[in-house]
Length: 151
Image (tube, rainbow, N blue to C red; front, side, top):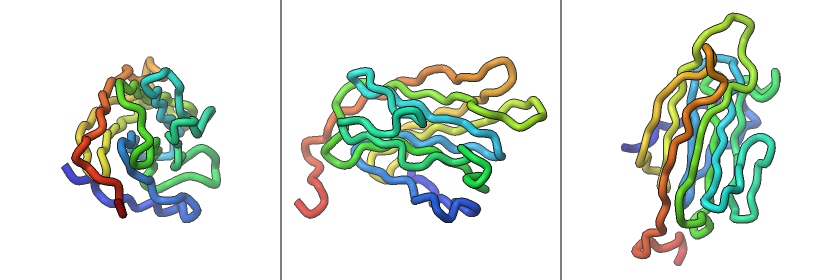
């Protein structure tokens, strides 16, 4: 499943989400502030509170986190550069950090990417009765046949 190109209109200063060994990407609509959390195999969590891990994992896009960062097509992205992702099980979930005044459910889509390819997708909602999505699991094992770019 190829990933669709992202248009981050209204987020001119926001870089395009990066990919690598593995990436976790959150999509939703509206001005609510959803947060993506990813725990790597050793339990170290990457989120808006801890944007980078020693392993190389990084939250590189964080939409709707402030009034000047509202995006037309909001996205959050946590990725590990090629050759850096720890092998093992990753846990990932969505938290509703701040919502608009009117109570409503906020639908979201979570994608797991290997390079540019979406390998798994989860859909859900947060906002009415729950601030946090279920926790999802994804295993990562390095493909020995894949070469690094330029190598």
